[in-house]
Image 1: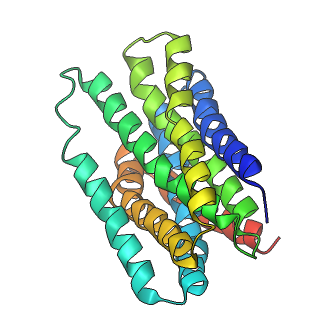
Image 2: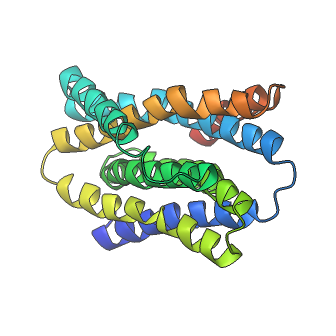
Length: 238
């Protein structure tokens, strides 16, 4: 069991450090399409493992109710669909628009990820630390994804890094609420876990894997997906 301050601090570090590192890394990216394809593939594979073997099973075992888990998944998917339907009219510059869409999507879906992270520290398994590593790795390519369009639009390095840091902050806020609310009922913990699982599952299937293959038609994304999944296995059975 971990105290609330530690959980919140971990959430902010995981969110902001991950996306911030992505922003910094983007400044040195040369072959954008191939590298992005590979990184997005790793993200998809790694998070697919986390959703399949951590978030959803843990949600079920914590609450003992498959209904709670399914409700959480559905709510998470509906949230992402709602966001997608309301953020496509904010900029006419295609690169700024792309960066804005990615930034808002990442920031908002980092919040339920934070809820899952905070509530996961309340379980009796090693899910909290494992999920922290998963989210940190997951946030790096997310930071790169937002930063690359900004780089193409010739935004300053300072602005790129600042924006990528900010989109990771909701993870810390979510971790605070997840760690606090999760102490009330196991059903709340389960709902937080499955809610984040639903958002991740939808984003993996609808955005990460298709976009990775679109960026580069070669094998980079497929190798990344397999590598990410294997990385999840190694961390879990370490």
